[in-house]
Length: 247
Image 1 (cartoon, rainbow, N blue to C red):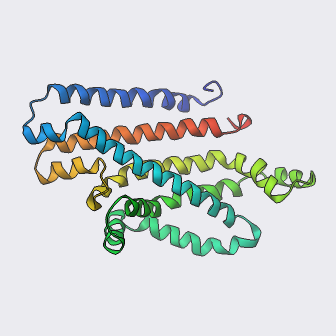
Image 2 (image 1 turned 60 degrees about the vertical axis):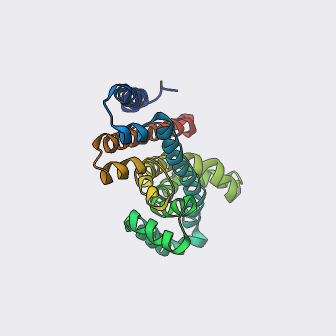
Image 3 (image 1 turned 90 degrees about the horizontal axis):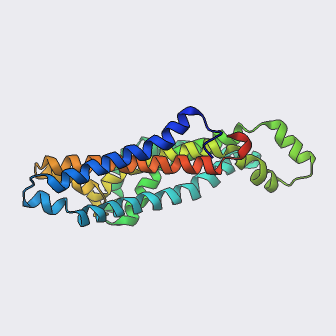
């Protein structure tokens, strides 16, 4: 799989896991040997950190699935001739969602709909929708027109052209948007803690509120490691899903 990749991609695919393991290994050694007070020790207990990490990862994964299941079909819709007139309004709404401060969206929706994971997912979906939508539209519009004409000349239906030609050719561009959305979700997911949705943001807020810098720095390091891990998974999926002739 790595044979046909660029040198940069090979470095990232092999280097990111090493960096993540280094960050986590260094933190685990520090956590086991550091002189922590009672509050820091309880907060940074491995079982508590594992729970917060799992909560954070759940939110990211749910949001990522929802974004992909909505943004890609909408992107396809906007590139069809009959519905292309919707591109302006949809892009305007998506840009508004991206431009709005994520903490403001989360808090406003929590006041309106209540606290918890579903509201956090909805808020982050609004925030991460645009990168996948924009890249889906760009990927589909950049497919070679001669290939599409050739497919139609072979009497392929519009659905067959979409699934056999357009989407496979657009996958690399779509996956770049997906990776961008994943990294955004990891960072923005820290705000989920403000509406009782859990996540690693709890370590950062605890560290700030109680002036416990070991907790604050631990939260930041663990979120950075999670963002790198998610980025790596996105790259692996991009390589796996890209048609062989395009690698």
